[in-house]
Length: 155
Image (cartoon, rainbow, N blue to C red; front, side):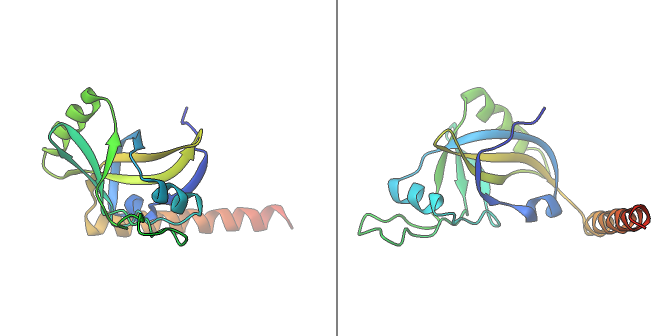
C-alpha cells in the first residue's frame, strides 16, 4: 500500500524515463522561510536534482526553488544544497548502496504533508538507450490498445 502525498508541488517525470527505480523513501527537508513560501506558491523543478551523502548526512542538490517574489534581502539562493531529514541507519544504508556501480539517488516528488515539506527520493539505476526506447514503445502500444478497447465498447 503506497502512501498518497498531500499537495504535490513538483514531480520529476524525467527520472522515471531515465532510471529504473529500485526503492523509494520519504524524507523531510530543511528549508528557509522564503523557500517554503515559494513552494506554497507552487514553483519548483526537480529535473536536475540528485542526493549526495557527506559526513553522515544527506543533501538534496540541483533542485531549483525560485526566489520568493515578495522576499527581501533575506531571500534564498535558488539552487542551494538542502539537508534531508532521515534516520542515520537509512543514510548509512543508502550511502553504501550508492557506492555500488551505477546506483544513484534522485528526487521523484516534492510535496506538503501535514504542513511540512517532504521529498520522495528513489534509489535508481540508469537505463540504457534501448531500455528507454523499449519503455516508450510499450507505453505507446498500451495507449493504442486502450483506445481501441474504448472505441469498441462505446459503439
